[in-house]
Length: 70
Image 1 (cartoon, rainbow, N blue to C red):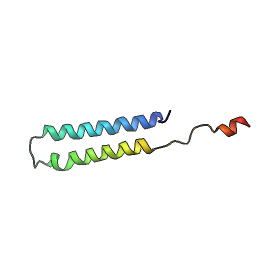
Image 2 (cartoon, one colour; image 1 turned 60 degrees about the vertical axis):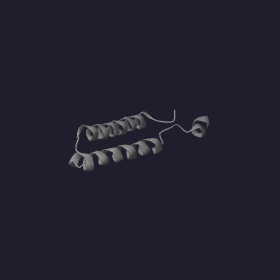
Image 3 (cartoon, rainbow, N blue to C red; image 1 turned 180 degrees about the horizontal axis):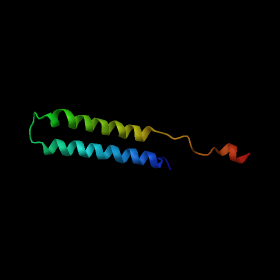
Image 4 (cartoon, rainbow, N blue to C red; image 1 turned 180 degrees about the vertical axis):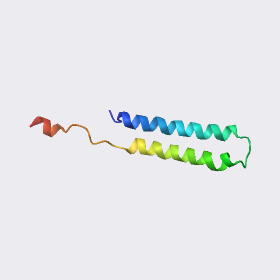
């Protein structure tokens, strides 16, 4: 498999952050509200950055084939 269970956990947390960010942005009906302008965008950007981390993160705990053959 390409991803480890840790990658899937980070990916799930990041998708949850993006969903929470868009949800609280939609729930506050003020255009210039504090949550809509400051909190939601930070959550959304953090979620997208975590998606990138989850995709690019690589664990080196795989068994090496050349050592097992010897």
